[in-house]
Image (tube, rainbow over all chains, first blue to last red; front, top):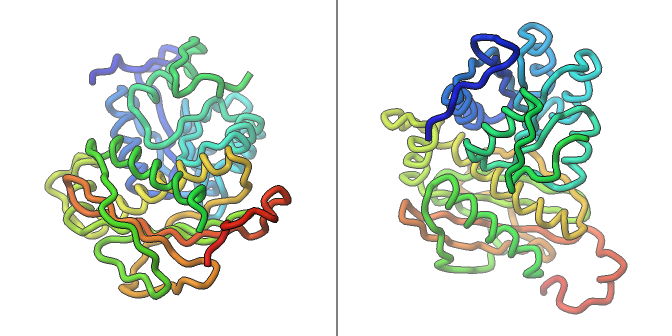
Length: 146
Length: 168
């Protein structure tokens, strides 16, 4: 499937921070980001590294896992958003129960997508988060932060 | 072991294999295991703690793990042991994550720990309360075993007098 390259505030490429403790999952997400015309600003394997990478690279968007060693994704979201209120963070996790989703959104995440990730669903979610354009797919309905 | 606890894992494995590997997974055998689980290929373990506790092992035959790694990362010529392990860990994470999502939405509160490679050829013992159910799935790309040893840590009040909740 071909994707129209993502855009954000007239930047030539949207820059991503990909956070997941699984190298495999990061590779997979990076492959999707590249298919979307995005650029990988950095990768991190846990919440602590994610905060450091965010501070040094200031990405346009963060794809954040939840269950990780050292610091889980929801705590990392809280800390990043506390220092960078405009941070755009999309949670990407296999654990998609309501408490988790609500907690992530309350801490400042913009959206949630459950693994296994469908590239077309992730693309639409990222477009929505980047551009505030209302796109709702069955997989994402009702999980956007109000 | 109550079927309510097992069914979400079966549904989840079927869905994850279909989504990630593009094929179906049929249950070929179901057995109970009270002894050490002996892995047959590349295996990963996820621990669960909370109202339900225990662990689940996903064990994929080595050829299928290599094939899944190559297909999912697009690195067809890169069939390394590490890639196969990472693939099985992430597939395990997805299967268990999706299953616990269903269980959590049924009202059980618990947390999932990050997957670990199950490197031993023999390992954790089952016990009277955590006797493992071993499901063998056949897919066109190889065999997958799911070894599930979970139990209620503390039965909820509504189920306290239910019969057949745990076996034996």
